[in-house]
Length: 71
Image (cartoon, rainbow, N blue to C red):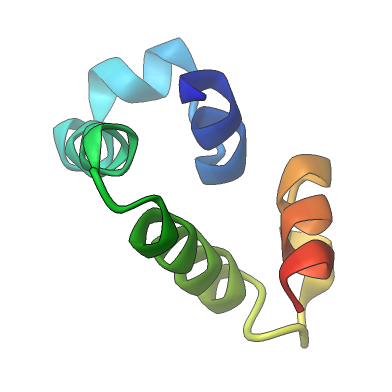
């Protein structure tokens, strides 16, 4: 599960070490007891990242797959 979330957030091991805030967000999603809320948070993050579909090119392949499957 953690590797999927890292791919969706565009994280690498180096990015995890450099960004405590992003690491905290990922940990919260992974450890959440409410999987539905975690999926909603991922969807919100990815949708905002691509300006709600207007800038799909900003997304990585895993993010695009998630976005298209959620919408």
